[in-house]
Length: 98
Image (cartoon, rainbow, N blue to C red; front, side):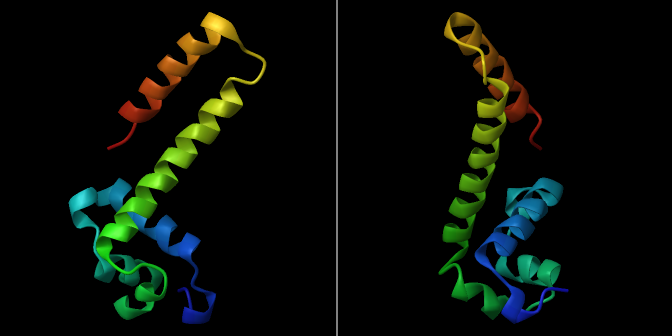
């Protein structure tokens, strides 16, 4: 259980991303994310003004994860080989998403 004083934007986004991974984007709602965090839905409004802003944050979180994974994999690789690896890795990461 996350107490309200321990709640953060990162925790809300992580819980929302987990919900989307498990149940799909249509399942995303303040009430479901709040239930996951064991807080009242109103507590989430301190971090996100609407469900749409939360969705954007989840997408940015997802893209940041992809960017970090690809950047790490491309260390020491350059040129055409780097472009090929980038394309293959991006495809794998995107197809791995539910």
